[in-house]
Amino acid sequence: MTEANVEYRVVADGVEKAFGDNKVLRGVSFKVARGTVTTIIGPSGSGKTTVLRALNALDVPDAGVIQIGDVDIDFSKPVSKDRLREYQAQSGFVFQSHNLFPNKTVLQNVTEGPLIAQKRPADEVRAEAIALLDQVGLAEKRDQYPYELSGGQQQRVGIARALALKPKVVLFDEPTSALDPELVGEVLKVIKDLAVEGWTLVIVTHDIQFARQVSSQVLFTDQGVILEQGPPAEVIGNPKEERTRQFLERVLNPL
Image (cartoon, rainbow, N blue to C red; front, side, top):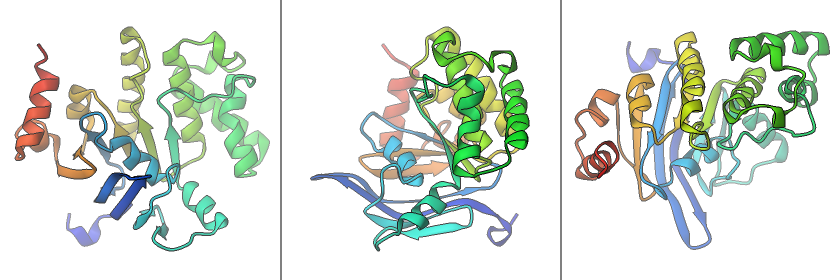
């Protein structure tokens, strides 16, 4: 497939972000094709989570242009609240720590966005939410509250909640890092299933083996830049950059 025939769900060009004097992103640029999985790996403090949060404007970039779906913003210029909301609606975000509403049932957590933000018909939203909960293996938990669920179950509710918004791309911020080891597999299985179904996913992860298995492309970040990007067989299997090799050696072969 030629470049001209590829439909991109994410195009980031020259994205910059600083927190005070700390310049966290330094001209980050990459593309994500529709129906592909992009994983972002790198050492702690390398900027990988800020890349993800910039895509959803949870951390609004200082400069650069990002297109999500069919909405693009030049962050070097003033952005209206309405335009920002339209932009943010293009993506769904799955947080590291679930971020579920504790006072709402599982079903209410999943239906909240489509009902309140998208103002869609209640019967339609409820039916779709139940189908999504069934997809992540939690249909029978729909009337329970988050505190009654395991961490892995809460994370799967978070995934269903993001999917309920029918986003153009789903963003995952280290979706298994807050889980007990025995619960990691159930969440990774759901993400792998979404990849097979053709969802467009961008995932920040520290699980290199998972990145190797699921990725269409891998981005390696270091000191606020994307140092290397390409298929997992190249970036993980045969990295070009010495810094990438050092990182993978430490992660894959710990003492």
